Length: 111
Length: 112
Image 1 (cartoon, chains in turn orange, yellow):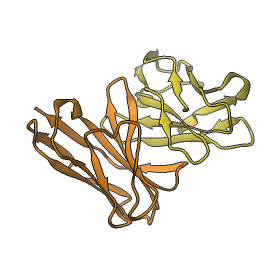
Image 2 (image 1 turned 120 degrees about the vertical axis):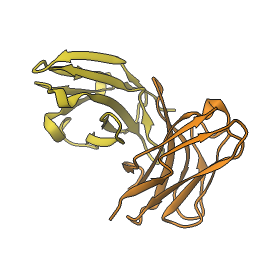
Image 3 (image 1 turned 30 degrees about the horizontal axis):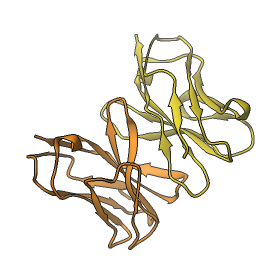
Image 4 (image 1 turned 135 degrees about the vertical axis):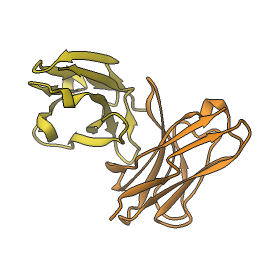
């Protein structure tokens, strides 16, 4: 039981490049979330999913897209990276919105 | 929309000092409240949560929090901090079928 895993752990991009972050959970959770964490800003919700095939926008969705093709995976895509997207990205999952288990994070630097 | 306010961005304490971190939320209806902790270089871990019942909630590692509905507050306390409590602490709230809303965090530094 690995819990919530994130791939990659660290990535450097140039402005305009694209990439996909992968979140995987092996707990059969319905709910999955992508947050970004910036100094002094706490965690802000980017997108979330309440089940396979569903996605919804969070507080800061602009510049990101997501997909939940399989229940255990939640992908976060950046089509054209910008320096403002330099951040630490956390994925979380849970059976209910009230109980979330967080992954180890992905550090993204956009130059 | 719900919001969470954490009073202090940084707190510095000596070991054995008492800790109280303030948290206020804006939503007036039924809420569930949480405190998460993030140790340096690690992911968020749940410290404690309040759903209903006794407003004084005990969590892991000797932490507790008190829900005061009339003050819209959920302050975190610990009688005697240790160096290993150095971390960032986040208050969070959820209501109904919405999503978790986090405060901006309080960085606690405990000097030995």
